[in-house]
Image (cartoon, rainbow, N blue to C red; front, side, top):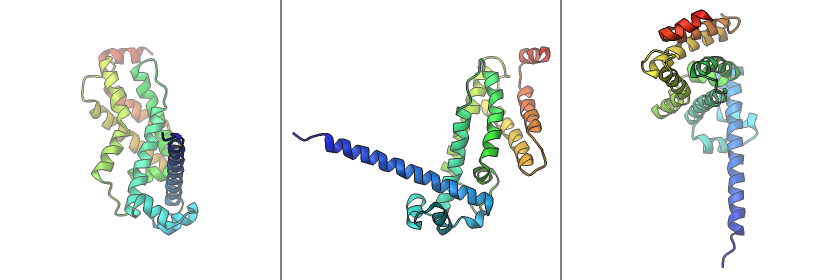
Length: 215
């Protein structure tokens, strides 16, 4: 009868190896993101990143395949970080309060991850075009807005329409204000709060408008 101990040890080893690879991958992406902000896209050479991260270029090529593969990994990692921050927003007593709370969280994510944000939305790497798969995964990372907006519509807070229509309007307003703030044209988040709340206000039902007017 064969002992299961070796298999258990092997499984533990594989788990540990995978955790180490994930940690290294995250470190490489963070190094690349910092270089993108501090130096610019010309710094994203495999040799430079390997030197900064303390590993060989072979490791980077093994993980990402090419510079284009690294850029796409950065793109997807940025959206994944946004998703985690938005998912971490505590649920509120009603869907409208939850939607309102997501706005500041989105801005905080953008300002906290300047390297990732610039790649996600500002095309800082010349010639990089994310694949259709990457674009689909990126948009899915922000689906929490669609879900919460759908809850708002079901609860009667927002007018009946396609949740994506409201989500896209909210996204456009948020991106415009964030871009101006990042460029130094806005000093704080007051304009961001104003334009995102204005979009939500635009889609409130009459009943919700009456309640908002009384507050």
